[in-house]
Image 1 (tube, rainbow, N blue to C red):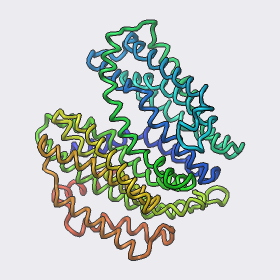
Image 2 (cartoon, rainbow, N blue to C red):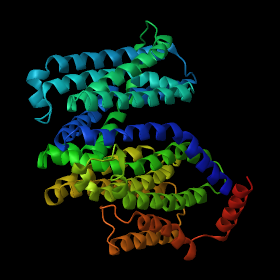
Image 3 (spheres, rainbow, N blue to C red):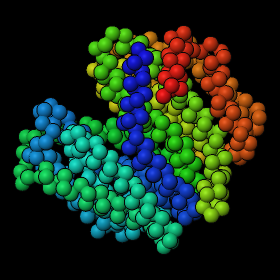
Image 4 (tube, helix red, strand yellow):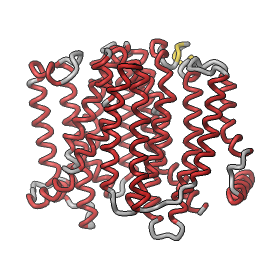
Length: 490
């Protein structure tokens, strides 16, 4: 068991390297935005990016996953004919639709969404959508042709360029919210340019109508699930805007992204866990391994939740930009939502664990159903909680949505593919986490960031509390002693 668990940890680090590097670079945009944009301008950018998240799903038509699935069935991941059959219709439709939005942005802008998003921003957004659609299938081709280095390099260069251009356009030239989208447009154009050799190598002047129909049958059913996922991830911004104002959305967006640091940890786990549990299907004791993985995830994820929740208030006040704080003080009043968002992504990690039973039972459609449950839960609580609690209510919709997704998959999984989860140990870990969190409240460690040393000691108290209360099993103690000996010897 421990050999498999350790391999999962190693693969989490390997697969997550490029993802973490990219997301870390993307996270660096947050300090830049908070110092260059007012909360109101940042709110406008957040709302428009939320709309783009929905439109990206529609533009893609699920064609990237359809292409990979069709190639996998054929056993041919380098068929130019299949790539061309998918690429030309998708690219043509994306360019045509974006051209309509671009040309009609003036009269259509008031009808396309939030009043603060003018025609000029929608024109920029329309070009970004078309460029991102053109890059979709080349990225899928790289994945299927096992070229992860090039895939990761383009992704990281994309984000690094966006960061550099955002610095120039916002801080140096003072373009405001328009600079955010000019940087995004230039970055998307550079990405398509970098992928042009892939496109040229794969494209042929052919179109196979029969293949295209199969691709649509694979891809279009994924669109509703993609839209439901977008609802869970970004519907809070436009709904919050409807009840409040742009500045409130900007305050919410900045602090929400601080909580998304937890997503870096969960994302690393996700990339390694899916191939891991598929390989476990035929192995003896696979269900016990899945149960143990959930236990370990809750422990490690709980430690990450505490670190982000207790230390974020201190981190944002660090003086790094010529004596300026990391995050502009105008955004500090929203720091109270960071623990709530981090808790949401801890529940998201539990949901990822729950995907395994449904997949191994060959009932992967239940994952789409669970996403729909999460979307409905998210919207319901946004509508109920925002009028009462504002950004705090909007933040609570995230953990409630992911908890509903995890709970629905768990319920289906019990009948489809029962896994003997270690319920007693899970409650043990949750109790230790609750004790540490309650102690932080008693000590008055709020979002102010004061007493950083004490906050760090509380983070370390969590694993110590587990150790002294008998959480570890004998085989785990022996394994830890063995790993500690190997580490000290090396």
